[in-house]
Amino acid sequence: VDAPVHIVPNGKSIDELPLESFAGNGAVISVTKNGGEEVTVKELESSGVEVRRGDILMLHTGWDEKFDSPDYNLHPYLSVDAAEWMVKRGIKMFGIDCITVDLPTPLRPKGFDFPVHRMLLGNNVLIAENVTNLASIVGKQTRILALPLRVKGSDAGHARIIAEVLH
Image 1 (cartoon, rainbow, N blue to C red):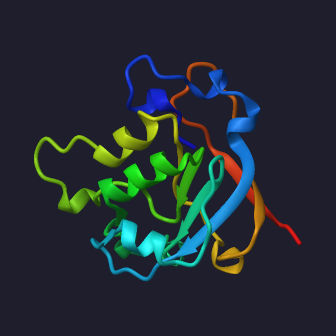
Image 2: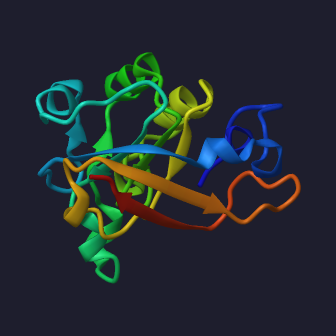
């Protein structure tokens, strides 16, 4: 889980964030994308999954299944508009089953400045990357816990992320 200080000067570190930043109601959206394709606002809005203020939003692309493959580094990514949409919705954390929320490393131009990281973390929306096993909870009401190791001054923390399906 990335904390704001990961990319925002003087942002909060993992140990400075309250515990409630890492737990909450979950919304899980699924999209089908090829590597190097961006996920758009239209796809999030047409998913049929309600995203509410304070939710932890997870995006299932199926890319976690490619983790041990060379294809893993050329993954789907989030458009800046989609990140803005999440900020306006007031989510507290965004998770994805890819190595990063931003443009894949092989496609980045010189001077790339991580616009999706900046948009989300700059607005105190935490980021969880390399999330796995989202397929079974797509569209279900869940409570998500993404509890990172609490390391003083850390810009991120490894987390065991779990979801409890609510009835």
